[in-house]
Length: 283
Image 1 (cartoon, rainbow, N blue to C red):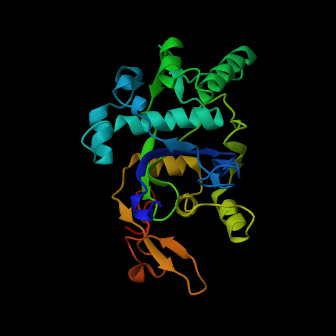
Image 2 (tube, rainbow, N blue to C red; image 1 turned 90 degrees about the vertical axis):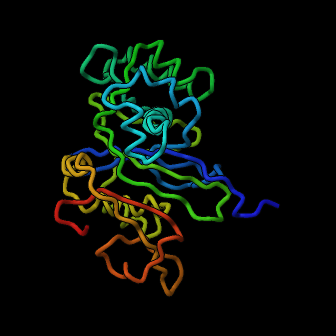
């Protein structure tokens, strides 16, 4: 029998795509009940970092290099692989492609039916394992443009679940002329959601969320607009560490400095760090 402490911690990347529609919304996708981890949960697009997400992409990225990415993540090298994984997983899971055709200033536009059908075919081949993301990016002459994809959170899931992740959270705007679609496999639905409404649905028991997702939605709910979220993300504010506060009736809440009961919370139960908040908020 595998002991809970023997479950490996897998590096992962997830993306909060925020947009003003006309007020702040974030893209969320729902996992099928058939999967082991996060069954039936609403999440942000994301998944594990693959070895193929590392140095093979260095010459296919604009706006960021591995030195800068690794420094931001406080890792010795291959930090860029987290951004690449974020782009790949977003494409796999939601159909949103955070890439530009080579030599063009604008992202791939999917409002052209012919282009949309071609990109949908590429995504299907990727999800079936018939093509790799690297092959697609190279053969389609694409560039991953990462200068406005910002690292804003990190969560290490606690000991116990059948799978554990060290997940880095990113935030960005959606590319113009693209709309999401779920993959019909691991994901069965998608929705643009107001953060506060997602939290109300969770409190009411009809919108299932994992604890890091809940905490990141609480951070987003402090903002009035996607532009304000992105403005804060670009500032790369100092990190704040979350603490778990256990409820008398069971369960726990993740709270940040300045929030109720933070001083009596526990840091090492579910380790998390966030650096996105409105100007003038708790520091």
